[in-house]
Length: 120
Image (cartoon, rainbow, N blue to C red; front, top):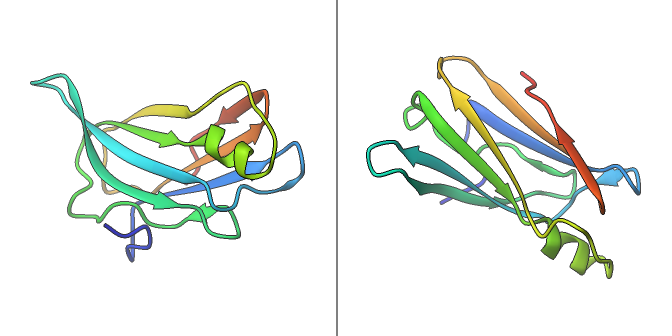
């Protein structure tokens, strides 16, 4: 699976707010909840580029209404910088009701905190 699918309705950006730089080379994965089996199915995996972006994670055709989870491997990221952190990973769960819209899911990250919001 590719992390650079064209025209993806879902994008992300990671910002290392502690150092004021993009969160480059962070592994992440996108999952969709199977509400009948109550399990998370892996949709795709990716890695942020040098600008902290992973521009496309899912095709428009595959992006259907439902509950999704994006998992960021923050512990590995901090370890690669020779630092430790409180959170080994960050999972952001969100619901898509209108897949015809575009969604941007930024992660603002330091070693001991994080925040996110829905962008467009």
